[in-house]
Image 1 (tube, rainbow, N blue to C red):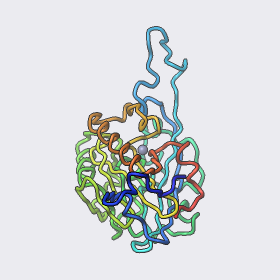
Image 2: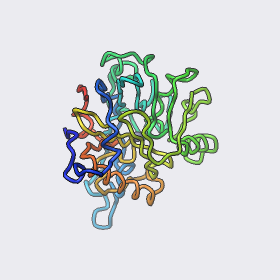
Image 3: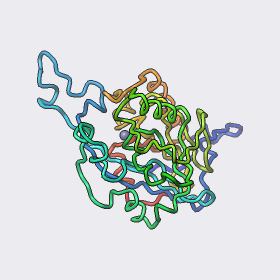
Image 4: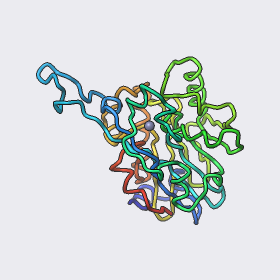
Length: 294
Ligand SMILES: [Zn+2]
C-alpha cells in the first residue's frame, strides 16, 4: 500500500497540489466491499480479444476467452459527512431483473448472500439505512442497479450532470439500450448533479470527470492520512490492462475522450503516488477486501 509521502517535487515550497492537500479528516475509515461476480466474453472489456485471424481462425487461445469480473462498492465512514457510499453494484436479483439476453451475456458467476449490498454493509458493522450520501461513478446497470434501495428517500444521489442526462436519454430513447435500465433511473431518487471537471465534493474526496466509457463517468480520489491516496475509476478501466494501454472492447464509446481521460489518470497517479483501482479487476480489488483504510 502506498502512503501519503510527498515526492521530492511536491515537497518543494510554493507548489500547491490540491489532490494531496485535500486530506480526509482524522477518523475517516474506508472499506472496499465485494458485491458480486460476473463472467463474460473478454471482447466486451479488451479491444481485439478473441479476434479470429486467417492463420488462427479459432482466435488467440483456441477458444473464446471469458473474463471474471468482481463488483465492489466503497463505504466511507466520514467524521463530518457521515456514511458515504461510492456506487451500488447490481441490485437484488439482478439476473431476473436484467432479463435475457443481458443476464446471459454478463452472467452471474458466483453468489453468496453476503454479496447483497445491505449484507455487505452490515458485515462491516453499518446499516444501509445509515448511508447519508451516495456517489455514482457512472449509471450503467452493474454500478447503479442498487439505487433501488433509495427510491422515494431523501438521501442525495450524486452524479455528473452529463451522466444523468445521457442515462435518462438512453433509457427513454433506446440510444444505448440495456446498459442503462429504467427500473433504477427513477424520478423518485433525490438526484444531485455537478458539472465540474474536478470537484472536491467532501473533505479528502475529489471527483474527476473522465469521459469516454460513458459521457459523464467520474472517478473518485480519496486521500487518507495513513493509507494514502486511492483512485477508484468506476469503469474508466474495467481491468488493469485498459489503464495500461489496451482500450476497452465492445463497451467502449468515445475512444478519443477515453484516451485523454486515461492520460489524466496517469498524471494523477504520478502526482499522488496513489493506488489506481479499476472497476472490476479481481487482482487489484481483492487485496482491499476485509481491510480498514484510515
Ligand atoms: Zn461495470
